[in-house]
Length: 414
Image (tube, rainbow, N blue to C red):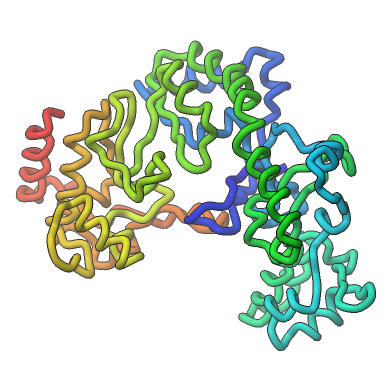
C-alpha cells in the first residue's frame, strides 16, 4: 500500500505520496523502538517538533500499489461494510455493478468526446449494448501508466491516459482485501461519479446513508483506540513539545485526543475546522495551538490572494474589515495586516513561512508571488524548488523591514 490523503479542495483526485504505510502492529511489538530512537536523536537538536499529518496515527489513507491516483484509496484500518449490512438496509446489492468500473456509451462520450470509438477499440471489451469493461492489460491505473510511458508525450495521449484513470475510478465500492466479496470499503466522493448518478433515486439515498455512516460514524471510537495505542507511548519517549498537523478530513475524536495528550493543534486561517465558516480567525485560536497563515503545502499569502477573486473579496471585507473592492494583488499593507492578525492570536506560537514575512516589504519580496510556493501536495512529482532569493547579508541591511517586524512582534507581546 502507498500512503496518501483523500480528495479535498486542493487535490480533487486525492493524494498519493508514493511511500509505504507503517506496519503499526510490528512496531508495537518492540515498544515503538524506531520512533523512540528517532525522538531521542532529534531532542539533541530541537525543543519542539511537528508531526506531519497526525491523522495518520488514527488511520492512514492507503492506496493499492497498482493504482496511481489517491482517489483509489481507503482508510486503514477501518471497519468495512459487510454484505449482510446491505441486505439489512434493504439495498439491492449487485457486486459487479458497485465494484467494477461503470462504463457505458454515455460515460465514454462524456470523458473522451469524439475519441470514444478509438478508446473502445484500443482499451475496452464489449459485453452487449452499451456495456463495456477494460481489457485485462488496462485494468489498473498502474498498467495504464506504464502503457503510456512508452508512448510519445503529448496532449492527446495525456488526455486519453487520464480519461482511462477516470474510468477505472468510476466505482462505488472496493473489495476489502481481508474478505473479498463479503466486506467492502466505500470509494470516496461516490456522488461525483456517473456510476452513482445513474442509479435510481431510492438506491442513491440508501447508499448515501450507509456512506455517511461508514466515513463519519462507525469508525470514530475505533480510530480513537488506534491513536491511543500509539501517541501516548510516543509522547512519553520525549520531552520535546509536540504540534500535530491536524488538517484535512479530521475525525471527530481527534481534538479530544490531542487535548488530552497536550498536543498543539495547527490552525490555518484558510482551512477552518468549523465547517460553517469560510475562514478561521487567529484571535479565536486555542492557547494550545500554532497559528500560521500558510504551510509548505499551500500557496503563500500573496499567491493565495490571486487564486480566487471572489473569495479574496470576502476575506478583504469580512476578515480585514476593509470597504470597497479588494486590490487585485496582495499589497504589502494587506500582507502585513494578515501577519499582525496572527501575531495577536492567543495561540502559544505564531509561525510564518519566511515568504509571508518578506511579503510585507515591496523591496524584498519576489516579483512573482507564485514563485514563493514550496510544495504542491497533489503532485507527487513536484520538486521543492523554492530557494531564498536574498542573502542573509542583504536581509540584515534591510533596516526598514527589520524595524517594522520587530515593532509588530513587540506590540503583540510575543
